[in-house]
Every structure is written in C-alpha cells, then in structure tokens.
Length: 235
Image (cartoon, rainbow, N blue to C red):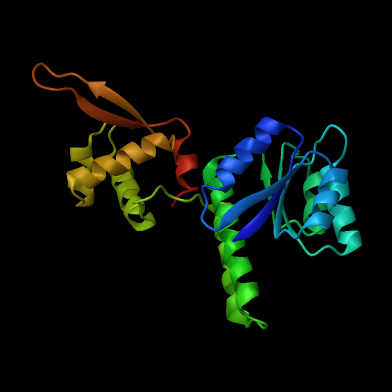
C-alpha cells in the first residue's frame, strides 16, 4: 500500500483529495498537514511514500516545502496539486523533483492517471535493483501517455472509441442516432449507444430527444462546439 501525506490548508479540499485518492487501488491517505512546518513534523513521525502538495497555503508555500525536503535529503515523491499555473511555479516544482503537476480545477480521470502512473513506477523501483533501457522507456511512454490522453470509463476501449469516432466523422450528419453510427461502424446498436452516451458525458457530443409523429422519442446526437478538441484526449 502506498502511504500518502496530503499537504493542503483547506480541510474540505483535503477531504476531497483523500476521497479521490482512495478511489484508486493501492493508495491510502495516512496523514494530513495544513502547513509546511506541520508537514515536516509528520515526515519526522513516520515514513510516507508520496505527498499530494498544494502550493498556495495561508501560512506557508508548497514550493519552499518541496525545496526543504530536497535540502534535507528526505526520500519521498511529490505530486503537486495547485491552482498555480504560472510557468515559474511549474518549472520550480519540476526542477525540485515533482513527479507530476496537476492544475486546479482538474478532472478525477487526470488524477487517477497520475496515481496509476506513479504506482507503476513505484512497483518497478520496489521490485528490482536495476532497470534496463526498455523498462525505463516503458515508464517514459507511460508518463507521456498520461499527460496527453485521458483514461476511459470502465468497460470502454480506446480501439472501439476510435472506430465510433471515425463513424461519427464519416456520417456527415448534423444530427445522428445510435442506429446511424452502428450502420457506419459495424458495431452493434447497443454498444454504439453506450459509447455515444459516454461521448456525451465527456462533452464531445450533445444529445437531444427528437419526437416523431408516433412512438417513443429517439435519442439524437450532435457534435459539441469543442468536441473535436476534447476527443483528442481520449483517442
């Protein structure tokens, strides 16, 4: 189990981060600190594997804490979760060894991807004394993939999503149904409908209920204004 210290001065945000963290297999929130000095005390009391670190705190600065941790030679990894989006803060965090940097507000899928990537790195370092080049390259590819793509919901595959998306583009309709996309993609109507609902939840598509002269309304979909930009995160 990966033991995590959450460093965040807002108790409600800290609880939210704890909730999100414990939705990911293999992680446990072992402690909370509301300031840099309190975090250093926690690190002296017991060992942790990972810190989820905010930068902007009322009585201290997360970047100063990160620098002090490195200065003291404390062996711990850090993922920064902060509203600080200026390049100097990001550069300083990365130069001081932050393994990832999430800008608030973020989607849970992004945090989950960061934690999954860290878990894989942690597993590899714990299980082997030496790494070969292919193992290092695999870690590098994993890091690149998690920053350029989003994780899919359970039961979804990237290959099927790509097929559905190509069918949406090939359809050329302002409004289309699951039946329309199923006919183009060759995927069953039920599976196509599930993926179209998923694309709607991602913000890629918009859904309307279209009422005909008789019978039940039909779910019709259209491309959202920024849909083409959003889909690139997933395919």
